Length: 383
Image (cartoon, rainbow, N blue to C red; front, top):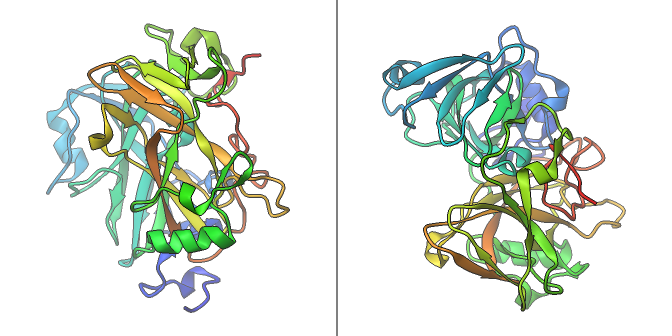
């Protein structure tokens, strides 16, 4: 396969995810624009671009897909109110859907497509987001060659949240073709360049559970009464998403304590932040995504998909044996018992078209490298 060193080297024959330096070139080439607003270099991640809220939000009576229409045309039938996100912004209430035109627009070449996901800090607040594009029947998927405006649907589920123009709630990956790794490729790669660690050592061959990706399980082990995560409190004050580190943990979260034999009973329709047993390591030539949980495995949903950028849990000097993943979990309909080591989500891996110029971690001041706690960046850490 030909080497990719710049945007001009890209073609339909070179599948993979675009890295940071090519995303920067794509911005300069007009593939990604924001009108008179400049796209800050800090919004370009190793394998994705942060998408910013525009100056207004529509409160809508129901979610929808545009189908054969433009979003701006179809949303007129569903608008209940319009909110001004400039200056101090506006509070989005729980359980209500909002549609926000994003600052960024796209003018992609025919062989480049996109995919969106919530940012990690958004998912940890139980704020549901998904990107909507014109003439589309799918959320979070940007068709090859898409030309037009981007929108994000936002639904706060546990906490009312204050948002402002310019705030980034989700991310976009640009990619060419399909470059996912099959299970046998992942297993062979793991033997030489480990993807998962358990208790500080590479996961053994028998410990790799695979089916269209690598499964992650829950860490609920240790002594009875040990804190293993958090559960969202009900009826809290609004949370300001533009103020990281400004909120007291105890105002929004209850501790989750393990029962005997590493068990926890989840309350129905309550939101939990838990931690994976395995530590994830994403080498520089790969990008990773947490995919939706299979509902046939129980009355449980790992709530949010999410991107893992190249360099997550990775240290070129070999001093970091992966980073554990925060798992956003909700039981559906009935109380549901979970156990230590229970599989709850799956990671899929794709190749990069080339290594990114910067990696997740110290290169970009990442919040969750080497994490041992599930709380997002908005909260002051408890003792």
